[in-house]
Length: 393
Image (cartoon, rainbow, N blue to C red; front, side):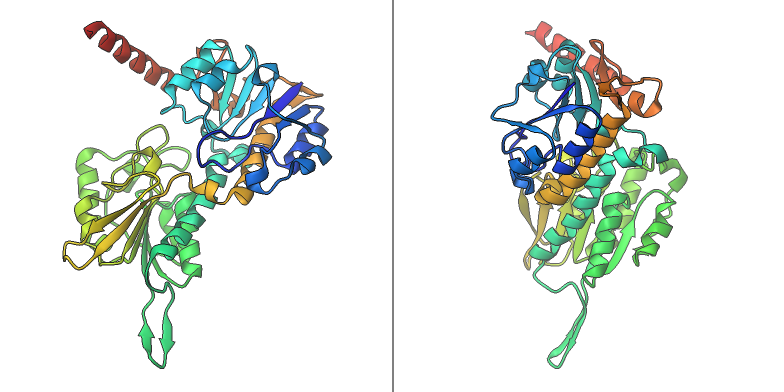
């Protein structure tokens, strides 16, 4: 069976869905691997390395001739439509926000798997791309903050005087948040953190951070798979009120809160940002999914005037953070993809066992239907709204 990896076409995307190591893994499974020339260039992987690992390097990949298509970013509807009926696609799918692509995959009779939907169970840890890419993104947020912050992170005691350490506040203590905490601590900052999930307090402290307990109903915010559940509006307002004084005294604020399948929760208002000291930096890792910070723009730096009128706060909408470190991000991501594909492969044949909870959980479309029910419901709503708008014309 033929597995193909194309160059990523989305602007700014530098990762690749296979490395020389994972190509060798797939070839050892009895699969034929084709990779488009230049697919790994941005990740530091030469075409020759793929060829040495057993792949066939082609000038231009023909998706319609593939049995399995591996990718990083969600496909476009056009890419989805170019795949052969009965073929398989594996990659990030963003099913809640890429509904036209989901519809195109179903129409094309493609069996698609979204790595975001891989169940967060022990057996599937090696396929958990959300965690592997969050690890990279969490590290990167601190590097981006440090490069914009006009002062030192660590404490310095010199003959000319003492420079105090930066105060870093991290909101959201999942994989990305914990990595941000650890990285900021290694740079010498004083680190504080908050998460609505009660289990996160010990994790924050284990990395040397100080956990901020807002005295909310934490149990009500504990979701499944280690994620948070959305707070009710009145509790969300209360959360922002309690966070405000902590934000005001921070030099660097990093927000990483996310809820799968939904827009990112609003944690910080514009008023809270303007209440920070001049020169402060805010990094919003959730900018692409709506943002945790009011006024954030994905992929841009926004200068927010301080309430004191003495300068501004830099609000950074960090977009595609993992792609800014394409070599290590690709190494981790490609292994996640290869491990999921290996789970479906036996004696050179890719035949997903849908009785397996990992495979069933990650499946989005199959047999011309959207099999992931939350996505199917969103698609129905989207179609109904479109039909209603068309009828009103």
